[in-house]
Image 1 (cartoon, helix red, strand yellow):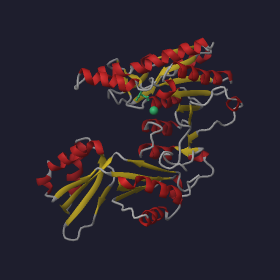
Image 2 (cartoon, protein in one colour):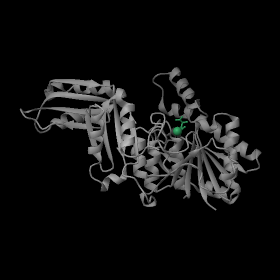
Image 3 (tube, protein in one colour):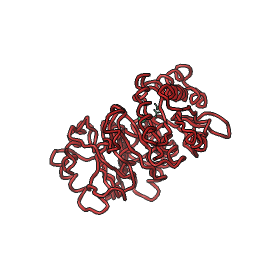
Image 4 (cartoon, protein in one colour):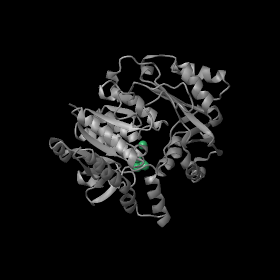
Length: 416
Ligand code: ASP
Ligand code: MG
């Protein structure tokens, strides 16, 4: 017997027929003798609709009311799934975030989970009951108001519930059958990974892979929640799923659990970055602070940073920001132009950040050199580079995205 959290995203609960399909997946696990808590998203497209209604009513809406509105999508699916399970003879009840409770901070619209009280869920297990929990929502207890976790947040709900009830595994059922070495729409030779380490998955998710909300991976890493990404579109009654063989999917786990690992695990890319270059900046102490403090004050996330050692007392500084913050970043810099005394600010939004990720890099030399050589042989110019222990990122012209991703994918032996 295992204790499981099963999470189903919007496309997996898009209509009543799909919800019945989900109920069959749950029933299969119950019949195998497992205890199950299910976390559901809103029906596909529902949250977008709710957000749009909110904005249509007022562009300056109260974020607490926004949360009251957008959290309703998950309330509906939790109730519907509980009914579908009951119909199949599986005892089940729905739980809203506030009923457990799932406690969050006060950052309405992108709240963080502070704690999950799993007592009621576990009591339900003793009665043979499936808990169907509305994802994406919790309660800010001091004010008693509903809070939502940011788009894609039900992944985080699922992992937090798994940690809260000490589940053996958190199964994320989604519209893809796992985590791939890169986006299969760009590289048809991309392979599904059997396993990936928490740290690698965190990089993949932060750097553009859209499978899981970044916060859910952080949470899984901190609480060591083994998280299995698998497809909800398989037939729940397929014989291979009943024989407890390994269904297709990707296990996100501790690196200790991964015996054979390649040097590079995957290639991620993010098109939503913009490059900002400040030319002719006086090179003296305090300049980096003068440049980056105003950006931090404006709540702009700076990523790659490149600065030269100056020859004649002046240098150039290049960095990237999310493209949605591009204009704000330029405005913040214009505000400190006199203070800093720089020449000009230039920028580009038609850029892409490509990242090579793998814990194997820690113990292998020459990983970056191979990437630079391969890109140069294809005539691809690198605008900026940044590295960490387990990743190398390069910023290049967006027009070369596919060529670069394909090239790197094969250079590191990831092609199927
Ligand atoms: N329904 C929410 C959204 O669309 C949360 C989720 O699906 O994870 O963002
Ligand atoms: Mg999602």
